[in-house]
Image (tube, rainbow over all chains, first blue to last red; front, side, top):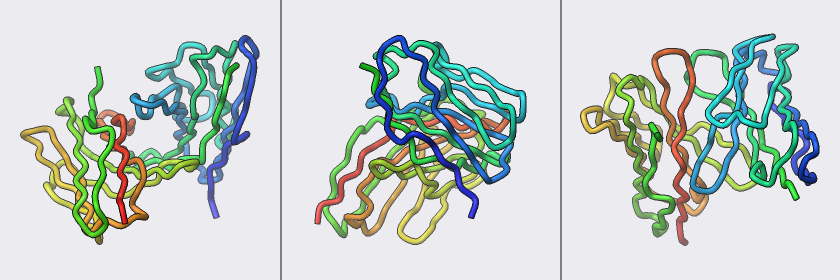
Length: 112
Length: 112
């Protein structure tokens, strides 16, 4: 069965370190998204990609970057982790129809 | 400026009664609306949707109502069950591309 997986599920890192969160989907979806979920803010878009070599900034992109070298993967990199980036991160993919996303199970990141 | 708002962060109802979750939006260009359900430690999953050309869509115990003139949609769950306890996100799609904009979420607690 097709799926979308995120790793790691939990991560603790120190302020200033570079961290990469993985997202891998086997739906063969062109569109992939990264969101963060914070209390009171819901799901906020960080970055998104509509295909290989395409990346775009979302609502809260400062301090984050992504790269898309193949259809299946969209890793999210925190260049220099900050305590404000402590959050739960969700990756999602879609077929481009706009009729819904499929989400991964999330990565809980704690920056200490 | 939040284009999709869920003004009630939490809602508590008794098992067997009706749960009504509300969502307001400001962008009149939104053409498709979705509700997602999220359990702890899991990613959001699609629940039900409605096109802007309709005013009601029903799927079992779940019904979504859309009032375009008021820019308001609601999710009705009848009867509510303890397993419905989760966070519910409202989302809207703009007709330019397939980007979804999410509300802040409402935590529903159904008491036995």
